[in-house]
Image 1 (tube, one colour):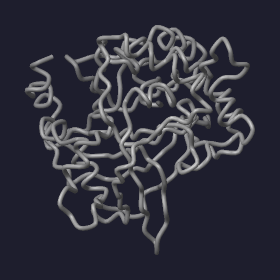
Image 2 (image 1 turned 180 degrees about the vertical axis):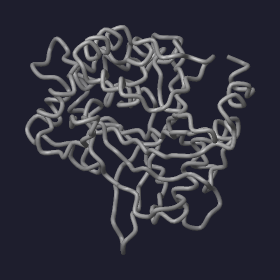
Image 3 (image 1 turned 90 degrees about the vertical axis):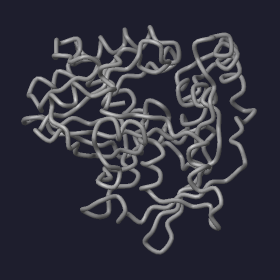
Length: 322
């Protein structure tokens, strides 16, 4: 979520766009993201998006609602700001992702939405099925996390993209026959995100990579106007929803049906990394976070440095097609 907000505000304040990619260094005016003008603009954009009409709480409200969670903080100049996300897994080593002791295992039992939240999810699913522009693909749900001898095992299961939109992206949905929102229904008593194993939500996994060009520019991509999530906003350099088929093919035939963090990044970024001139093995792990706005939806973040310059990246096939 923070990248989508920064990107949207940057566009509104006139940050230069080069084709489908925005290149900017770190600048002081980015703190305007946190000003009232920025928050107001975000609210208007969110209401125009199909799925995000059910996400309405502000950053301040989210931090207050999830008062038992430790929100990340960021210092800009002399000001310290809290972000409505929490860090679940920080990087454990200063080096490539192959050194991280994080494994995942894929289970075949499909995520099923519980009947307790059917009054919230059923209308959203019905509406999504009517929208021809949205595709209900198979994604990966994070169902549990175990710490074993200084290593972490993540348990994955298949889910549908629409299930994710009907749960994590419908947290502030209040149907006519319900007195509470979905957020209040599943987190209102505890005021925390609850663990993945006990969660009612799909918690489908997002993956993002921040790229820096060889001559020192940070890259942000512009999202299509046709997507259901944050249309036309600027986002992190490469972002993806982890697809079940990609993960399954990567571990198919192995005895343990397990993979590591490098495998995960390779599945998510295969095409994007190649087109932008970076090798997956050179990525750094920034952490796994959970987003308050989307009810604790998990997102993996990485950092990589491209071997292309600013001008070379503008001329890449990806940008020429846009």
